[in-house]
Amino acid sequence: MEGNQENFNYEKNKEKIDQAENMMINTISETMDLYGVTPSVGRLYGMMYFKHQPITLDEMKDELGMSKPSMSTSVRKLQDINIVQKVWQKGSRKDSFIGEKNFFNYFSQFFGMKWEREVNMFLSSIKNAQKQLNEVIENSEADETLRERAKLDYQQLDNAKEYYHWLNHLTKLTKSGEIYNYIPAESADDKN
Picture 1 (cartoon, helix red, strand yellow):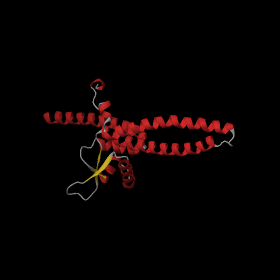
Picture 2 (cartoon, helix red, strand yellow):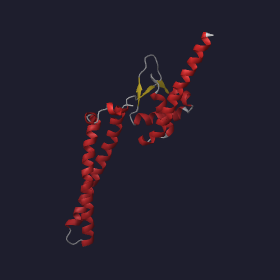
Picture 3 (cartoon, one colour):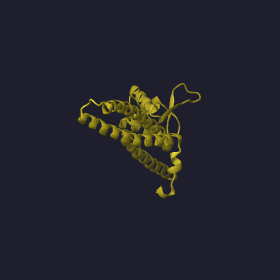
């Protein structure tokens, strides 16, 4: 009788853990579009998040019921955004992977990389666009309406530069982890 009660308690507790993990996996899956991945790739990361040891492609395939090529492509996508890393496992010839557990590390890496790309692209384009606009502004033979339009565009781009210089500063703080000096990772006011 005691064995049956222990088994019942085990199954009941296992079911609660499974439900809690599945709830979070679904949430992760639905929100991963922010990072440029599909819900199925998000589901893979969510599953890996709850694995407390590295997992192989075959194990992932069995767990999620996806094909091995699809699984491989999904893992590569997660590696590209630095949320999954390949790890070496002693005694195994198969590649093993582990999902990032620290969202603060991921935030710093992912957004730092994306914002840095945006800053570099925009500042370079603004510089080139303003050069062309300046040629129109300084051309005394240009139509006055076009010169005014060029001046307005130039000023608008100057205003945009202010934002991109600010974003560049935020990017550096984020990538270095200094942002957590201003907004602590653990704040007593935010805990529930």
